[in-house]
Length: 197
Image (tube, rainbow, N blue to C red; front, top):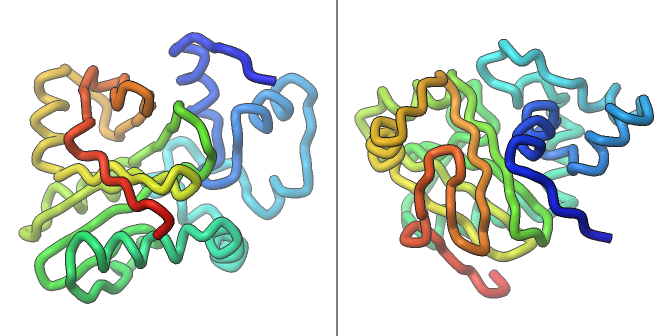
């Protein structure tokens, strides 16, 4: 069953989502039915003031989930395909990767859906802005075999144009129209399709 929801309802759900864990259904189940599943012990709801949500999740549980969903393989494929350089994880970040010339921050939404949402917290965003390397935010969806590979300099320009004033970024992407709703931005030019990678 599919239901349509307004953008403001979607944003409300997004703010309460545990990254890489929650679906809109699991958020609603938790909020409406008070369903406190065991997974909340494995994936605690992050402190909204936390500068890097990912660090609130146990490493082993996160890696298991990445491997199960093929996200780790998808990341490796994208880095090799797009940059042709050797990358390593940047210290203190599980989803930020660095090479001699690039700094890439990955965010993942792994469902076959035309609506995807991502949250780029203040700490990694600052790291990307201050680097002397070419910096990218990569919004991935392995289920659809796609990624939006967006240079941080382009994001900064659109933040300025749209008047976005928060210290973090929320990316509610309508994939059907390639629209980043919060920044009122068509990001079709940044879309990468990877077939069966």
